[in-house]
Length: 340
Image (cartoon, rainbow, N blue to C red; front, side, top):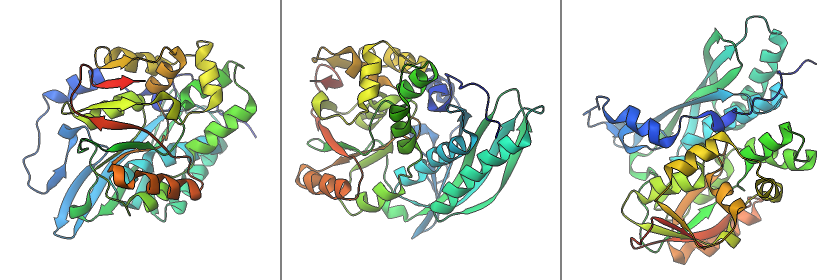
């Protein structure tokens, strides 16, 4: 079967507008004063949360991007998993989804059918309803979902409420953008690529089903801003964090690729944004790149009290989720993030 044209290097979450520019764009927009809007765009969180009644709120989010793999069915699964992730990052359950499609008029529609098949399977795996969508013609292929979820308003996970002493846990390995870019240039093996795409198409539903049984103080999913950028949001200018680089979960082939200067445009935007906010005690350029690398359908980043972190990581690992405890939240220090 035909496939999507040559891999687009700026695909996936690597295509997102950088955090600095995005913040400037949103700063002056009118903000809602409705008391039922519990989480809005002013907090840079993963999704909006709107209260319907005392015991029920809806989560609203959407996500779409250009291709980062050549297989349309695989692309559909990855894009859908990425869009669904924002609901899980808030602690919610997915209720329904709508397709968002941009597709070239001259291309074979069987390619689009395969994209939609992959997306539909992931929505079904989430236990949600695929209720329709919207499509337009465009010069390049783009796909994603608008997603609605549900949550108890008293049990929302936000991305900026961590506490001093919390440990930091990440549930998926870093480096997927380095791998997809390197694979397109024949610098990354098929085995390494397969590991990355398996991770990207894995729903964060399974990690959240375990995480919500612990006293999580803050949660987000790691996507376009990289681990460093999303941790910066979590610290919210109130705290600092220490990262132990030897405890970071990452794909070994991404690490080796970064050592050979396989870089991403999004990673360099993230590096520039974090200038002055992060200090590397460890002398390892590849580790730096992994921390800035944009993650497509990345893992959940959670802050959890020290007393619960070992049990949480152990339970996640026992379920086949490669989570690691890689750092902790501290009092404000000379830099917001210090990497040892």
